[in-house]
Structures are given as C-alpha cells and as structure tokens.
Image (cartoon, rainbow over all chains, first blue to last red; front, side, top):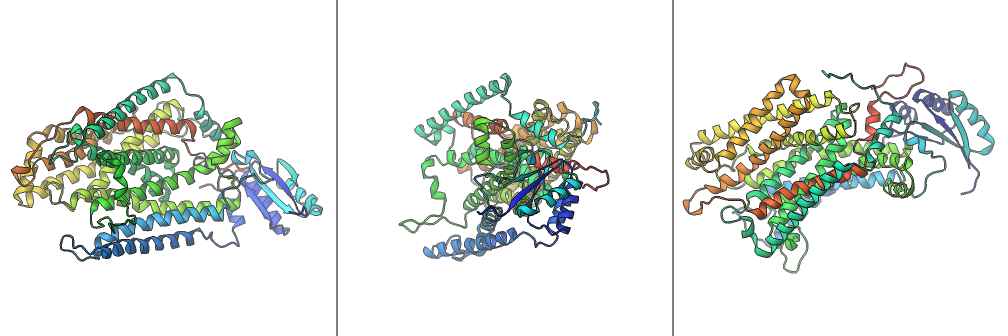
Length: 172
Length: 448
C-alpha cells in the first residue's frame, strides 16, 4: 500500500478520556479510526456504532440454522425412502422422530455458520499484527489509532493529547 | 458472611497478572496427582485391551444386563457437562454477572466431561473400530441409520453438543489467549500468537465478536434442555418398566444440572485455594452454587416422589413389581444410597453457614456426585434385572475390567482438566474485567 496515510496512536488509561478523544475526533471529521480495547466497553461502542447497522453475524446464524433444519429433514426422509422398510408400523417418512434430528442439525449448522460469520467479518486469522497495535491494549490500556494524511497528523496529536492520552505516537 | 474481609476489587492489570500466575510451573502436589492419574489411565487402557481381546463377557455384560456400568457412567458424564453450558450460556443470557469467574472452568468441564462420556459408547460397542457405522454415510449397500431409533438421536444430540460447546469455548478463549501472547516470551509467545489468530481487540473485531457470542449463547441454551432429554429417551422410548415414562426428560435434565453444579464446586474450590482466587471466586459465588444445588436437589426429590407415585397409581402390575423389587431386593442398597445422597444430604444447604463453609459444601458436592452416579445405575441395572418375564431376569455383578474402565474415565477427565488449567487461562480475563468498574479518570461514569 502506498504510504499516503499514517496512523497516529493515542494510548489512554481511562475510558472517559478515550470517549472524549473519540467524540472530539468525530466532531473534527476523522472517521477512519481503529479503537483497541482490552474488553468491549459500552461507552466506546456507543460512540463508534452510533451510525452503523448491527453486525450482520446474525444473518449467518439464521441461514446456517435454516440450512440445518432443511438438511435434517432431507437426510432423514430421503434415506428412509431409499429403503422403504416399515419399522414399528409407522409411515416411512415419520416426521415426529425426524424433528429431533432436524433440531440438532439446526443448532449444529447455526453454530458453525456463526463461527464462519465471526471469522469472516472479524477478518480472522490475521497473521501479522497491525502497526498501531500495542501489547498494553490487551491488559489495561485503550488505544485510539487515527488513520490520516501525514500533513494532518499534528492536529490529530493535538486532539489526542488534549483529551488526555498518556502517550501519543505515529506509526507509518 | 465471610470471616476474612473481602479482598479489594482487582484492577484490569491485576486480572492479567493473577491469570498468568496460574500458568507457572506447578509444584510437586500437581505432579503427584498427575502420576496417580497416569497410573489409573494405564489400568484403563489395560482393561480396555483385555476386553477387546476377551470379549464383552470380560466386563460382566450378560443378557439382560447389556448396558450396566458403561452406560451408567456415560449418562453420568453427559450430565456433568450440563452445568457448564447452563453457566456459560443460560446465565449469560440472563446477565447473571457472578458467572464470569466460574464460567471458564465450568465450560472446560463441559467439554472434557462430554469427551469422557464419548468414550463409553465406543468401549461399549465392543468392536469400536466399527463405530463409524453410527454415522449416516453413503455406502454401497444403501444402508442408512434408522432415524426412528433414540440411539441415533443420541449420536446427533451428543455430537452437536460437543461441537457447539467446543466452538463456544474456543471463541471465548481467543481474546484471552491474545492477552497471554502479549505477556509471554519465547516459544510460548509463538504458540499463543498462533492460537490467538491475530486477535487485537480492535473495534472491528469486537463488533462481530460480541454479536456472535450472544448468538452462540442462544444456540447453546436449547442444548442444555435437549441433550439430556434425548439421552433420557434412550430409556423412555423403551417399554421396560421403570423406564417407560414421560417424566424422564425433565427428570434427567434436572439431575444433570444438579450433578454438574456439584462437579463445578469440586473443581472450582481447589482452584480458588491453589490459585489464590479469593478476589474472584468469593463466598457469594459458593453461596449461589450451593443454592442451585439445593434447588435442583429439591426438584429431583419431587421427581423421585412422582416416579414412585406414578408406578403405584398406574395400577400396572409390572411397574409396581419393578418398583417393589428396586426398593427392597438385590440393589436396594444402591437405591437408598441415591436417596440419602441426593435428597437428604443437600438439605443441609438450607443453613446459610453450610453454604459458605468449604468442608460442608465440598462434602455435599461429593455426596451428590456419588448419588447421581447411583441414580443412573438404579435406572439402568435394576430395571433391566426384572422386566416382564422371569425368563429374561438376571442380575449384574461388576468385574475388575469394567470397574477399572469406569475409574479410568475419571482419570481421563482429570488429565484433560488439570492439563488445561496449566496451559490456558482458566479464569476468563476479558469477562472478569467486564464485571469490574472500568477505569475512569473522573468518578461520574456509570458502570453496569
């Protein structure tokens, strides 16, 4: 990638100062942000997700689960038809017992599809760390990385520092 | 409630430190336990090899006692798993925040208990290299499993349970492994980095993660109710007196949660002691778990009474005879052990001091585990011993082979569990932090 942008990273100790920095950055029109947090924090999510739709993971779950239901009924009914042996005087395609299989496959496929959704949408696995990442972000620090043109980095630094970042650094 | 003052609330950094400290090289006591486990596992393998060589007769299986201790122990281990899913999924959806400090251990218990349970159908199949016959796969002869059979439902229920619980468990572990990666060095760092899949806790990762986590919990919740219901139908769908009852599904699910919570106590209490987790697993946690054991125990007692009442009220000669035989004859000692351990002993938990007293709570939990193993024994063995025709009657006597396999299954479970807690975070770093007040510069922010 051409180095027309750089990332300015602010390391914060507190949630409220992080939120202050994010509000300030958004007000000034910086929208290309990555926020690193050790835990998901409501206050930060409220700022970031204000104008975003809900994560589409649930679509994966729904599609997976429905596929499972259909697959469960297809498997049981189709295989019973393959060899039409009457068991216990019941119809060849006896639905009540097949509900159990369809139910289990609904859950199984739903779970696997949710995992696929998570891996795809979260773009996992990532083989090398992003440049802005700092090991402190998995312990007790909050990171705000602003991706901007190099000539605007001074103003970003200013915003981060004013909000109360304990450290501000630029990574190319 | 506590005699010692509650430890101060840990900070975010403390959580990382306290979890990482559990991964130190363990002491002699740990290796002593592992040696004992190794010994029992050697016995387990020896017994299994002997059984394969000699045949199922080596494990005391004779008609009508073809299920005996193997299926008893299978149902026991499946049941143990349920409390883990209840804690990790159901209590998550109910936002019961006290679950955070015990859920990782409970979830690991679930996976390992189901894996241990999974050994038994294989062992019990005799020629376990044909176990894949259980699965629906295309073959030349157009042979498919009989999907009307509860045993086939069981294959699906348990494989789904194991798969979904494992996914849920691993997804929960990823951010924690990332935290371990960032604070370790050398080869450990490389291994954790690989397992963390490049997790960084950025907002674009947390966003799908949080959503997916809730969905996993929602998917796992019906499993808490369905898995043991399906296991109970292995029995209830048959006509055997003592089995053929619509009561079985809720009866099994309740018993499963009851025994599972007892196992959580058995595992968490030593971890709290050895890992010095008093700040995370407080007396309040023990109190809640004790209350859950007490509640599920009372519900179970009610089911026992229903079972007896139904047998009497049915007016069915065989049901009444089967009940009378169970209560008074060959296996009466097992039945009364069960009643004492599951109905009488947990009553002490009505007393508040008992709920937070480690020795009492621990003793009750072990009694519950013994009682619940006997419950499954009492369902399987005495019911099969006396069904409709005297021609098919027969009692079961354990042999050294199947006893060693049953004991060995505990060793297998503890091998997995003790191994896990030494290489992986057995306390959830992320979820524990979520319950702590987030670091604020000015004390005005709300925290949940």
